[in-house]
Image 1 (cartoon, rainbow, N blue to C red):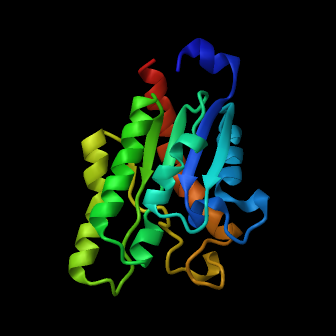
Image 2 (cartoon, helix red, strand yellow; image 1 turned 60 degrees about the horizontal axis):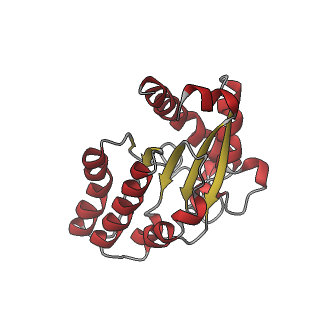
Length: 196
């Protein structure tokens, strides 16, 4: 991304995720990408946030549709996958390999990524929890990618911020997520600008 390119069009940020970022059961205006775009625009960024979240996606299915989701004007990406892998008890090695492939492709395409982590739910067993929870910091170090440790930080376990299913954020929960992740997104954008 050159400064000339950036000045000629809005920045484009892709949110590659599952139902947590896609806006499951919410009006479009309350979905994470829409609320994040509004927050970034209020902060002075000329930016478009693209919703590439698909409910039910595993890390592998997100990897498989990445080429479809990306376009030549994608500058940044938030990678928010892994929750469905964990809920289904999939081998953490499979999840890690899929997210690794996503980050590698984004890096090869010159897309600056922010990795949004997930934490294993209680009851998955200590061994599984340890392997799953290590995926995100390990990959962040491997790819020198910024890490937002837990996408649902401040929302998980807070019934007032969740839908009745006790998992997905409601509109208030989305606003909490956006307020907490916003500094990391701004740092991502600033870091990319400093390298151009």
